[in-house]
Amino acid sequence: MKPAYLKDHALLHQIQSWRTEWNRLHVWWLGQSGFLIQWNEKHLLMDPYLSDSLTRKYAATNKPHVRITEPVLDPACLNFINVVTSSHNHTDHLDPDTLLPLIRLNPALQFLAPEANRNFISNRLGLEIDFQRGIIAGEIKDLGGFRFHGIPAAHNTLTTDDRGHHLYMGYVVEIGPWKIYHPGDTRPFPGLDDILRYHQIDLAFLPINGDRPERGVAGNLDATEAVLLAQSAGIKLLVPCHYDMFEFNTADPLEFAAVAETRGVKNRILRNGEGFTLGPEMKGSE
Image (tube, rainbow, N blue to C red):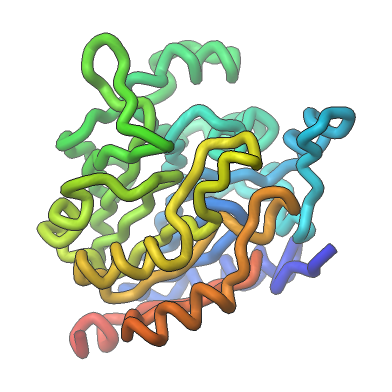
């Protein structure tokens, strides 16, 4: 199993020590599509999967979820979270073993998810539906000092409920002067690059594990598709994700890096538990 870059007390120490750096955007990859974002002592947690629930669930099946990288944090340590998002209902993006400890520890926590999924989420977590806020495509919601724009996602298709609300949703998040795009899981679809170009994305977290039907799970962007989307949409910095979690559903970040270099797309490859900072001087130099 690959070691995390930082984990447990070492990672928590870095999170706490960086929070005093005002007007600097701090980002940590927590594995799969999970990211922690810190801005002026506010903390946003996107699609966290911080347990082994899927490994246990599929241990005796023909689709074992064997971990590649060790977990980075116990969610019971995160008592400073302001907002948590879920992009869709798959367990690596909506994990009760991660979310319930977070909700218990953070009584003022605000939870954002696709409007179409609110009943499912309430049933899965065993909580009243009012604990969460729903969002639809094109809608804007302000929570915990962050502004969220609802962006459709295709996993593998643009799927809606009987009201026309998307079951898979990404988010463009405005944080101070920064705009971040987190799709959760998505395949390319017509018009996505136009939507993102309109928002002038500074930083995007894009999956690179691809779409291989033999895996028996819904697909994502592959490395080339992620780079081409970033290039077409004018994304300033691309961070790949959704790899190095499960053996059967991963990708090689070095192949991604080679494609990004060929296309001239600025990128940053992280290890689980690794963070970085964007400061106002970087924003001003764009």
